[in-house]
Length: 525
Image 1: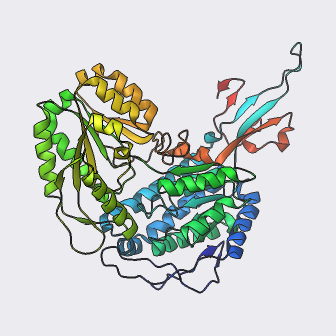
Image 2: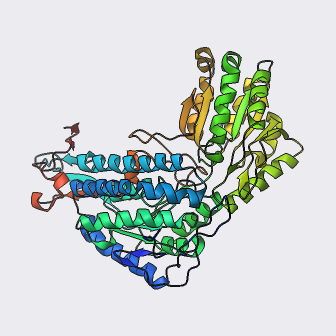
Image 3: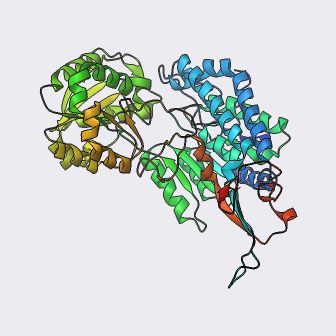
């Protein structure tokens, strides 16, 4: 790929560092991919952040129409290189070409969705309370408020979604839609893919006539470069998708700064699936097939992978267990994203297998080559799970732990014991669900998304989606990384009191020049 330079993008300029220290690696073969990428220097990182701060003076005041045009241009540019992405990304990630094409489409759709939100404009929540000088005993002033962008945002690319949660993913799209310049920290597992998308984004900024600091793409070791970005006093927020350890480390840095900043991290989730007795009796084998498909999808490397399955230990359980055991036993091995993820999965699966309270029911076919993962099915009981916190740890890969219980009380105790989750799923008949409202009420406090009679893998990109949840699923369970409410992560409320109309933002001017929906004296119009 001749267009790959091995350079960071500092605004519109390429970095000048020459010593390559970061290389993509084909996880299936172990082949080192070219070109290598040099880590940015401290000077270059500071330059990128300064450009972002300078750009914010213009971009932060741009109209929603202007931001929408930028987001659509980015999507157009990515579609123009879709064939190149489909050729390169599988080499860097081990993901199949159809998955990359799907993810490219999702990324572009997400950009255009945020474009529509920016263009429509009512996301700013404009509120106007007119003055009442005759009010007694105290006159009422004119008060108006709306959301304004925070400033430069740091975004960390994810390993498991080289497009949808990376350079032009949800955090970047929502930050740009809000009016925040973005500095992206590329993931070392897919540096070439990051550069292709970064170039598409940089060209969109240029072609839109926007300042160069609206976007930069930096390469460097995750710890040093990432920590430097979060510490930088001119960075006003950050978005992260990755490990619990990495997320918590950066959370602490963000909180310990002289000026703490919002830090939105997606970190750890085992996404429990509860199968109620009526559903098990009615469609146990179908549920086994659905669970198997969900736990092995993408080699189990989805943040919403169902790593925990909770079932009633009665006579209806055997057909389900028999079917899912059969399916797991015949599951082919598959390539994981990189050697680090592969090693962590092997280690975690081995630890579970060695736990005396856990039985390995089934193990998929062994694979040849590097970074190969075998599907594994584990089983334990409710008492063991409740007394061993390690059984609730995330195992990132194609596995699930089946936990059996013998009473509703035990099932509810299991639900109450869970940490915060991205998702929680309940399978039940109509009668099951009516009889277990209390379970649903518990799960609502534990997860950002609660599903009935489905499986959690696959996140619909739409206005109402919530991809977040209580800690440790995320660092802040009040927000989402998918869905248009993500735009609120990178904004804050500002109130304007007794301003002349000409000095107000256009969203708050009396004539409503942008023609957006607003709340005026308590009425939405």
